[in-house]
Length: 529
Ligand code: N01
Image (cartoon, rainbow, N blue to C red; front, side, top):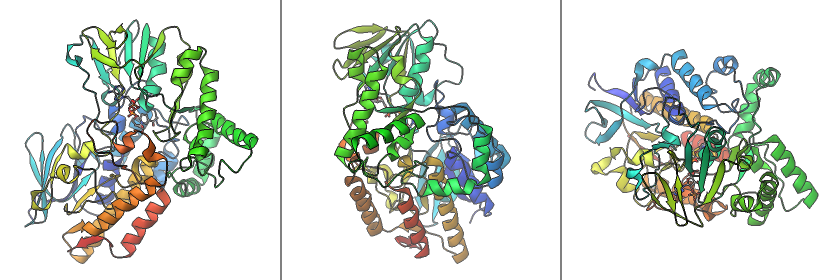
């Protein structure tokens, strides 16, 4: 092995890359992280739009690898804001002295596997090359932004922003006419804050979304202390829930209880706030009739929150609660009661063009100074396929995945030895609390490298038959739910031409058990040598 050969190159310095680096260094491996941004933080570095905050509670959306860290870090709100999470990640980078192995402002352009040496040749966009035994993609599930190619976009003379790639300097909306295109989680968070500043805000909505109130609040010291007295209990509880955090999920069917009991449960969850709404009943995402009871409840709430009945009607989602990711908001629906906010239903009157001065739909032209794209991401695969990754026989990952991603456990893809993905397609990832999922993967990968080192092994890759069986299993689990029934980004349906394949794996506890069994079986389903 040449002196220049690293044990691992890690791509990305968000939650995943930082944790992976810490884990590998702790086992005595050499590793370097390459990060395109000018700072660490990943998602929380790029998504700086007004209102950006996590919708998993801060006490659970945090690392658990070091009890001292989770004891000492003080969260100030129930749901942490983007600046606070970014501070936390910078603290982690400093606390564990990670920065010396992180190269910022450097994008990995290609990673080519050399079959004769079992080494990856990794090239960065500045033309530098580095050799590594392993590559770990810690590139995030929601990091490759999607800006729709609306005709005339390049002719717009005002400012154009994307929530997922927000400027570092403050953006002043005061006195400005603003268009927000998109009403997913990002749009729903940003819209109330932009509305509070802009002279007029036009919200261009293609599909109305289900959203529940976050009920965010300052985190009381006593509440934080109570969790910290027995942090392990909260982590264990979260790990046993389908989404990997404490949704207070029940085993009860929405169809087995009386109307009054069902309503009481929804009211309690609404008042409690946030994503645990999905834990109201066990069959929420499994049974269309059960789900319809939740959909009716949320629509009734919207009717009560929005004064103008015609606007309320347009804001009412028609589909399945949770099929597109459930949003969590602060005053989203109430924002449409403001005189300076107009909802433009682009399902009814589609956007035809962006002009020099605004947005033109089939029925009107809206003059604006600024357009905010809250139009999401090429989720789960975009950040992987934009890197030129070539495995055995020079085969490109993007070619292998042309009909949709194929992985074993979401961690590895056949034909790409010594190559790992953190929270890749086929793992719980975006259907789970990302931080525990990331840690579980980083731990699994680090233990795998350690196991190989102890046995003098130089190569590990997914066996094609194990991968085929896993892909079939991921689909089988998804097909037993309501998830495939809508055009969500979980299915790639938000990106024109992207194959329609359900990408995440539902069921965090079963998944962790499977990963543990694979290890116990001597890395069952992998070919090692
Ligand atoms: O993106 P999205 P996001 N013309 O894809 C619309 C996480 N997240 O950035 O539904 C017009 O959900 C699109 O319309 P439609 C979370 O996992 C978490 O908001 O396709 N409109 C939709 O309304 C989330 O799910 C947090 O019809 C177009 C919107 O743009 C994920 O990130 C906060 C369009 C995109 O919604 C992505 O959320 C933020 C077009 N051509 C994000 N193309 C929290 O933790 C798309 N749209 C709280």
